[in-house]
Image (tube, rainbow, N blue to C red):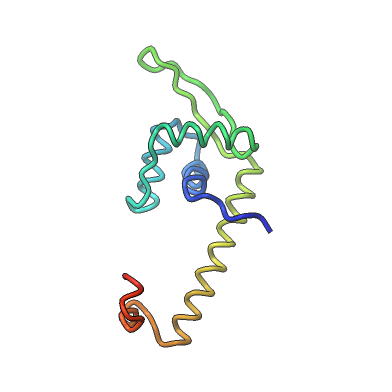
Length: 121
């Protein structure tokens, strides 16, 4: 079984699942898809993209010259789509297990306070 994917990696791959994007586009899409919970920084993003490209999960789709600057677009590879699918299934299984346990013990968002304040919902 593969190790869990880092959260920034998950959101970068998710942002690229629908179409190729340049760096700022990836940042915007990840923020939107996560409901504002993820805010990738440029340094983190480009280091991650280099690592993901070396791992064969993303690749350069094209480059454009915009305002005198080179804009590089990245796309998800088939290997990257497979890795994202596997991580999505791992997360789905985790959510199912947690939901089952919460229901089993009568805990939900309204009952979480019964855990003595250890859970903040």
